[in-house]
Length: 231
Image (cartoon, rainbow, N blue to C red; front, side):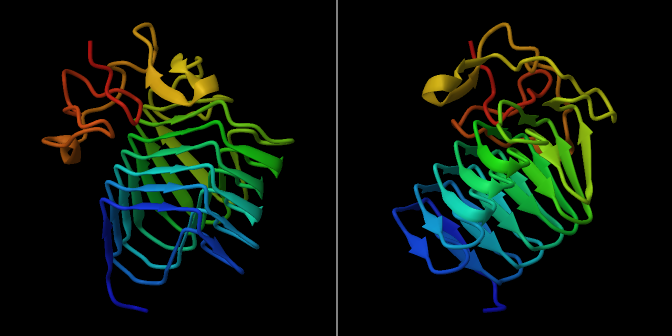
């Protein structure tokens, strides 16, 4: 419905939908998904893991992985506006296109990792279909597609302090391999020699927050990752 909703500390797995949102479907504005896992769900159209039509929604400290869709968005379909994905791992999802995320309108992605997603056709990582999606302190790397393996679409992808390829322009972005610990076995934490360590920007909204593993987000400069490297 059009009211708000909150999903917190939940595991959503093995679900399916006839059309949209195999794991989660909502139309609510101001919806929140927090500290959850959305894994191994499917649908017969778009948004295998999550389909959102609400505005001003927040998905935080959540893993979205191994979801599938025959259309767009194995992982997340954002048909929304001014929504936020923060401290999330979106990995190993599959779709015809936009295997990780398909986004419309204007949204933000902060300190998140989008990796290992596979699209049969285009945009393994993210498809920005319209508007602008803003990436900060994030990794979109190691995704697979016939074209636009990491990002693409008819909208605008704006990167700052992030790691992706090809070079997207913007502020302080890098194209180097992020050097995950073991991406083949789905360990997307960073090795000690990762170029993403201490190369992010200390956004005021990160003060007092933790990463996906529960580590303090700010220890010196922010990392460009869902996981803070802790030695």
